[in-house]
Image 1 (cartoon, chains in turn green, cyan):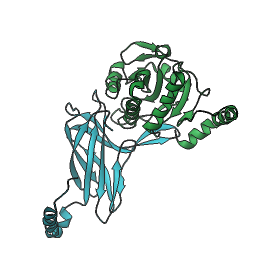
Image 2 (cartoon, chains in turn blue, orange):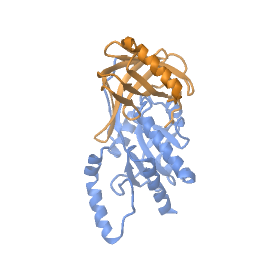
Image 3 (tube, one colour):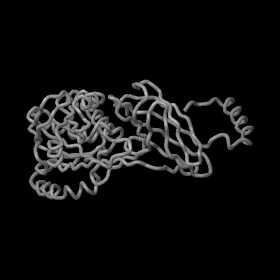
Image 4 (cartoon, chains in turn brown, yellow):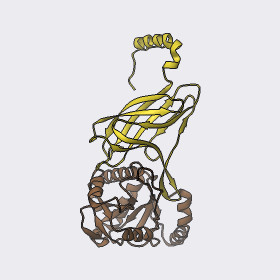
Length: 199
Length: 148
């Protein structure tokens, strides 16, 4: 998400924050505070180990969620490497955090392929896939529209998808929104702040 | 890049001057810091490098091929309207005395259909093609998926 788009999208959120600031100072988030502006974590999908999973399975953990697909050799790895870097900066706190990589290409992303892909980046990543209907519903819920680009002569295709990194607290409430343009320090700072607020 | 000792550098300079008459044979284009990000399950990988043009004229990179992959395509990733998108690129111009960086999140070669099993630690051979018909051979290391 570009900065200008983010600003447009978050204007109401900023207004609310300013009002809140009259009574008490808001926490100094580095990312965009989306509390109350995006729905709670909720889904019925299939994990990269082939098991059905719901958001309830991740209650009690902080979640960093990103939409992508495995036939994406550049920007999806870039974002996952970025989140891997955040995990390294979190140190011991990393055990309280889960990365969810939601496939927007369920046709090609079987649990098996997804499993090999996500484990190559970080042990804390869970890959999620499902039926096209389930994935569409999930993307809609987080306004993470995606679309399959025109098929190439070799049968391959690309999928344009949201660049958002969605961060949820242990109760599954959406709290922060960033992108890979935010540094690992900024993201780690905010996750630590979230963990610190709760402990 | 390796540091050259002064005597060696001077000797090389002499050789360079001697070779100046054959300038058309030594390319002003250099490919540096090339590498490939490995991905499992024979998924498409991405190749990155810095391509430098020391010549007085712009050059145009038009594509690449590799004996290690069935296909190598020049692509560009972009973040637009909150979305990550990828598009094919027909050619990429490198200005005179300038360079372009093929780097994560921007221009890259999408390397598909490996012709044999490839793993981190391997090296792969890439041939870059330019609009004037010139080709350049490069050997790039294959790094793990989570390489920076």
